[in-house]
Each structure stands twice: as structure tokens, then as C-alpha cells.
Length: 436
Ligand SMILES: Cc1ncc(COP(=O)(O)O)c(C=O)c1O
Image 1: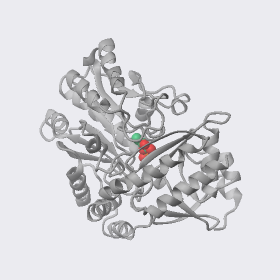
Image 2: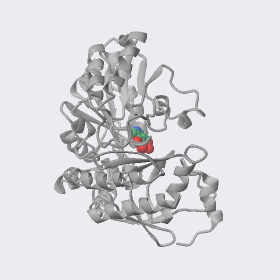
Image 3: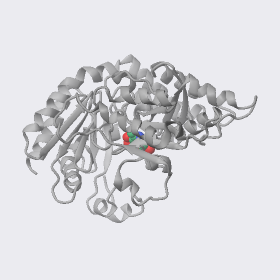
Image 4: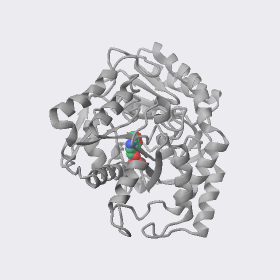
């Protein structure tokens, strides 16, 4: 592909070192199955399913055709006071795989918007119950809930917060669950459930009746795959129930089969009150997110409003966009027809065996994983994160895409991968790490 360096200047890239990138660009110009093609024509295996959003692989014709036909048939209609059939169909398909009684789906355009929407639903729920004094929110260190003001307020990542100090007050963070004394744990750590008692301590300190909701990623994804200890999520659920606090699972990465089950909620046997989702909802083919809530939350908010009145003063111009719904419907049908979540479950052991085989390398500090999701943490060199950034680039030129956060590489192979693709990924990781 031809391009001029000067042409790269206008696009201000997100979460990117713009100056470095524009001096040494890494453009993706094609994608088919588990492979991407870079601007030099080289093949790059996709070890992170893009940003954890393309489990079916790239270039699926059924999805592209569904979007194409939808745009010709009905490209846009106002989602306020009118709607389109696809939004109902997709909500129905999603509600079929969310745990009961989570049966109501509100569409948004990203994971970040799903978090802001969930925060507002929580506020509306408590207000409808006459408990508008519940103004405190609880999240966790090392949490990532997107980049809107709500998500940044809940964030436990210093670089995502320190520039943006005027965010929501009244958010307290529980400890993260990574334990430096227990490295190379595959699956759920045996110890650490007691860290959920941070929430009980907040209830003692601030009063449980002032806390509106707890937001957690069942597995903290973006900060390096921190798998919850056995009993931890169960304990959070118990404390929330004791104090009338809503539990929100941010399933933006974990949802749609990544853990070998439809949602993390199924994998870990804990049902929240609200779930946020995005990414694999449309296999990344259209921007879309959603919040799914249980019957009680939905009814409490909708039934509190007068007859014929709008019940929830919230929504986006592109909520349930017809093209995104068409992509989502096509994707949900493929998941079902191809039993993609079972495929992810059956590939998990092979993937984790491969990943954990890297532990003999000196540069590797820790490995964690669950389902088709794994984190490889490197010993930092110089400034924290510098090695991770360099390694992500080296991997790219060695023919593999992996998302790094700090010094942790986050692996999330497409479910469309075969064992030989997993082998290729592990070989490329080993070769790149050995050269450090
Ligand atoms: C757990 C979690 N929540 C929210 C988000 C934000 O999603 P988006 O980038 O679509 O706004 C992400 C993105 O990676 C995420 O991992």
C-alpha cells in the first residue's frame, strides 16, 4: 500500500504514541480468518482478536452481507419513540444467553458507553426505590471500564486517571486480586477470596446503605488478565445482597464465550444485577455495546414512571443502529450454529499449555490465564511499560499482533484458531521473548 508520511499527521490516534507511530507506522490493510495483513504485505497472526473483539476471525462474509443488505433496506431510524425490528431481534438473541433473570437489553455504541449507561441505571434504580441517597460507587484497583468520565471515575489505572482529575467523586477502590506471592497460577487462584471483604469494610466505614453499586470485571482484562480467586465473586455477591447494593459485571471482554461459557457469570456461577458488554457482540464488525439488566431492575425503573411517560432519560442517536443490529444478529447466529463458545472451551487447555510453556524464559515474570484469555507479564526494563511497548512492536514485525498493557501481553486468540495457529502464536512469542 502506498502512503506518504505527511499524510499520517492529521489523524490523532487513540492510546498511541503518535510521534513514534508516524515515524514508524504499522498499518493493517487486510484481515481474513486469524490473519491480518500489514502495509508491507506481510502476514500477522492476530493473537488478541484485535482488541478482544473478533473471536470469529476476520472477514466473515455472513456479517458483511447482513450489514450491506440492512443499509440498503433501512439505514437509519430514530431509536427514540420509534425503533427497528433488528433491535428487538438482537435483544432477544442476547437475552437468550444471559443468565436468568437478566432479560432486558439496552443498546449503546461501545464498552465505555455501556459503563456510563449502567451507572445511570443504578442511579435511576435507587431513586425509584426512594434510596437516592446511595451515591457511593465501589470499583477496584487495576480496573479498566473504558474512557468516558464514568469509566475513568471507576478506573484503577493511574495513567488513565491522573490527567483527568475532575471525574465523579465518591468512588472507592477495593484491592486488585493479583498476588505477587502466587505466580504462574493457571485458572482461579485458591487463595484470596477474603479480598472481597474490602467491600464489607467499606460498608462498615461509609455505611452499606450509602453504596449504590459495585463494578467489577469478572476477570480484569486490560490490566493483564487477573483471574478472580475462588470464592471471591461469590463473596462480593453475598455482601451486596446483605446491604442492598447492586452488583455490576463488566463483561466487555469476558462476554460471548471468551471464558468458554456465554458470559463470565456462567463460568464462575455468580449472577450480577447488571452486565455491560460490547466487542464480541458484533465480532467487532460494527461499533456496539449493551447493558443487560435483570427483571427487578428493569421493572423498578420502568414502573416508577407515570403512565405514558419516558421512564429512563437516556439514550444515544445510534442506540441499536440498524447496521450494528444486523451485524450482531448475524454474529449471534454464527455463535449458535458453530457452537463457538464450546469451541473456545475445547481449545482452552491447548492454549494454556502453550502459554504456560513460556515460563522457563528469564524475561517472563508471571503467566495467568482462563478460557481463551491469558496474560504474560515480563520483568520490566527501565521505565515500567517500556519493554511491553517495544515487545508489542517487535512481535508485530515478527508477524504477530498482541495487545500489551504496561509489561503484560494480553492473549485472546480467535475461537476460529486451530491448534496449529496456537502453535504459531506460542512460537512467535518465544522467538520474540528470547531476543529480549
Ligand atoms: C472491561 C472493559 N470495559 C470497558 C471497555 C471500554 O470499551 P470501549 O473501548 O469499547 O469503549 C473495555 C475496553 O477494552 C474493557 O475491557
